Length: 165
Image (cartoon, rainbow, N blue to C red; front, side, top):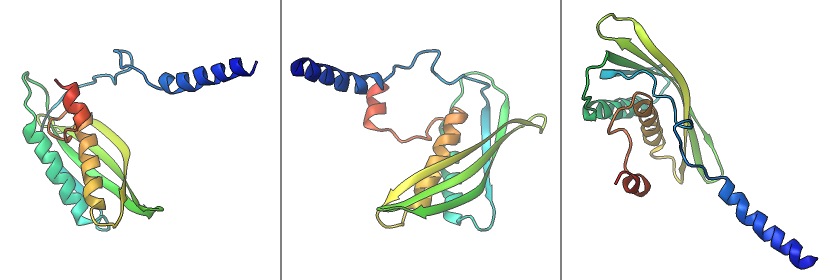
């Protein structure tokens, strides 16, 4: 009896971690939605938002826009990125930074807003608090690049480099 209970415990403990993994299928992936030819971006924020966060976000989003090449003709748009709230909380070994961001896409031809998104981005910086705004700016730019399918916004990691081969 004890031996069968041990076997059952081993099977369950081996099966639980494996059940947490899932393969992406066409049903699991995010809907493609409309695609735009983003021509530029403007990053704005209130005066209490750190200037390093605004400048870093602007620099990274502009780099992602310049790296994106579209092979087909798409509706042209300009992005307005507003950082409405930014702050940090001390944690045990570092600091957790968080920002609330609103992105509006405006049509170049008509001037009307064609898309809008609001999201919260957070990152944790361990150790001393130098680089928190830079890490948060990278997370904001990565999220904007992912939403509008821009290239060059994300840094390559070993896992993504192997997946792209």
